[in-house]
Image (cartoon, rainbow, N blue to C red; front, side):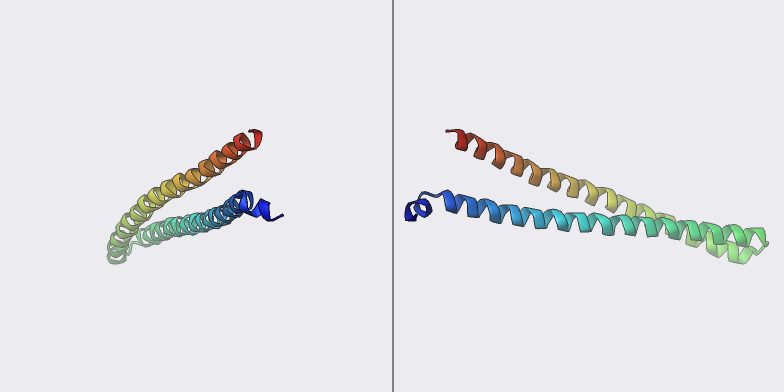
Length: 119
């Protein structure tokens, strides 16, 4: 039994298990980040829609002073939405790249273990 521990098999398995746990936790974190980003983007979109509706209402009622202020707020909301959308796209891309790297590492490790197991 002692020879199994010294052979490296147990150590390799423990390292593989630890790496799997860490990468699985990282994938869960990335999933949570994606969900927060989606909610933030959706909320920014809602704010633009709300600003647009308020402006339309003011214009419909002939409230030019309020419409002028709301038009400015709508433009600010659109600008902020553009910033949120750009950040969303950038972070989503990075999250997907990191997911792919983690999955690729898992596949490479599994392939190497399969080859070493056959030898």
